[in-house]
Image 1 (cartoon, rainbow, N blue to C red):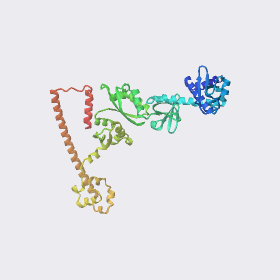
Image 2: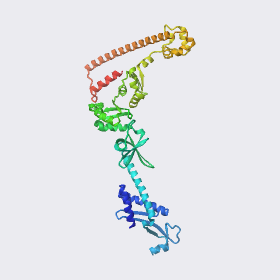
Image 3: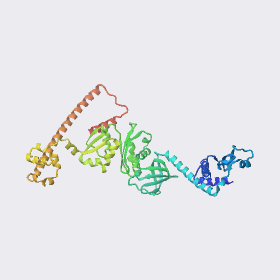
Image 4: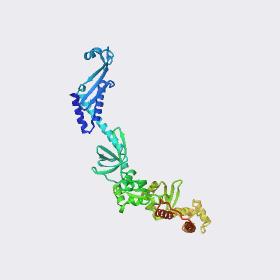
Length: 469
């Protein structure tokens, strides 16, 4: 009955842990194998059989009958063997049946400790296997612990860890609150499974869109790229696979209902939804919203872009701490640099040397040259106070020279603008002529429009492209 009592005691422990009977049988075998190893030092000649239905544990010890015993664990003398089975002779196998109770109460108590350890291992492996398959999913758990470097979330028997880097900046957490998280990773460590949860990962935002926008879930609309600074701002490029459906409008929803649900979940993170375009000029312009560039210079080979903004718009274009232009660069794949229009136009003017400016005397520009000031631009950038401290400058009127140089720069700039205006007018006239020729050609031979693109889509992109140009 001792084995039945042992199984009953072990079953009570396993029942609390919801361990299946088959798994418990395997664990009990492992427990007694360890007891055998502890008592005999070797398990090679032992078999442990657990019958859960009968409540029996059978332990068989295989020995060899010998004339003279040299290995007491695995050998038995002829005399001792014949007391049990008279027909046995030297060289015959002998099976000794060991009563589980022979291990003693202390060892059985130790076996229970081993059982608990084995059950913990089983539980940890089960949790790991479950959540390894859930990586990439969004779940809801309750906040169990809040520590300096991580928030711990309970979900059933599992504990999920959300490190600080995976948290939304500025978000407040309270113990006992429900929280929605993205399962980012599951790894098995010496201490057990570590399930990493995230609210900062781009995939979390993507799944929120899938849950709120049916057209994304059924792949009518696809998310092309996401750039995100969690808790502050995100830029999301979307593309419609059905030209009848407006990708941005579907994501925003009626009166912003869909996008607002996502924004609330992300602690009021601002989300810019951007319509995809095959034209880099249009895509970059859209990505730089809320600022709109006055002009773009794009190097498609180097994946670089220079965006020129009106002076009043440059701060909006760059964003707080460079956030807007940084996210626009990331989401478009182009390294975008922003510049003021005034600075850009000044760089387009050839350097104006002091010696070429009428009204600045030879000895004046030579003195300035000796101090490293050769152009009107360099003179404008120089400190008047510092110049006045130089002895050789005392007999020169800095104010008059600066005024003369400034006037020359303005004249040069006006000339440049006039040239650009003339070039622009010529370009417009050339474009008008080309359009007139195109109309004549269409009247003679109508061109079939692409079936997969609506007139409104083409018109909108052409309009945006012209505005950028």
